[in-house]
Length: 225
Image (cartoon, rainbow, N blue to C red; front, side, top):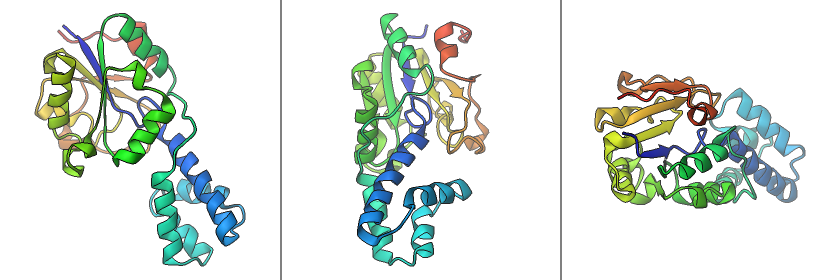
């Protein structure tokens, strides 16, 4: 019997590109004022669309800015606080629906604690779930998914067993390989996230695949017994 739902954060409960755009706007404003870079925001968007990696390196190269400017951009991006972020379609309604129906709710998210907490605060999700674990805050990157430590800790905090837990995520490289360690039911939300086209880690696929979170609320998913 399912008693708890645990969610990934980025590209599951909200589109991570929202955070990326917010960071780009903050960096662009600083670069405009400090270095006189014109149209920095659309330039960052273009570079990101071309390749999501090394965006600030390439902008600084184009604008003939120093290595110090690149480091400033990275620091500004990582420490900026979005004013607000929008939920993925149906996410907020789903959390409220599940809580109303008595399920325990949690979030497990990887990433630098400051940045992930900034996302959590901007989304306003704290009051909608029972527990949130930022894996890096447990002791560094080694605790990132699919390390089972955070999942074991979450089930303990929620007062449920692994087999009574559903984990909902999007990233084939980390979110579903937990099945190698724990009998969690896994659900993949398809979409256009930053890692949507990655191969499944260890070849482990999710138990259930859905197109959007509304399918969980709508009862179209048949949970395995």
